[in-house]
Length: 66
Image (cartoon, rainbow, N blue to C red; front, side, top):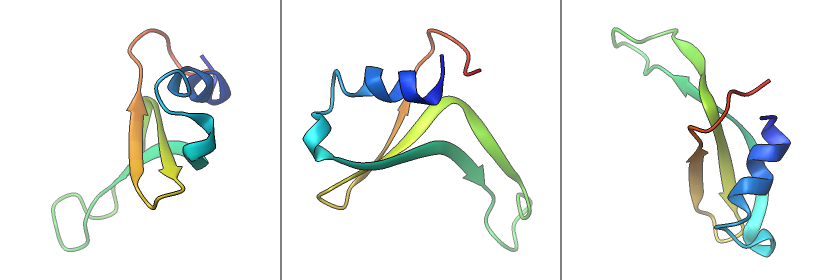
């Protein structure tokens, strides 16, 4: 499943007119912690920014991202 396909699946739950932008979800570690410098893409997930200022991580377990 591509990121665009994942967005289309998310639109089944979130109305398209509420979505401002989306990107692959990335986990980044906090500075001065044991995770400092860690940055990795979360598999099968996108972060969606809504027009009201909210941010949602949408994840599927159906298929792998290409």
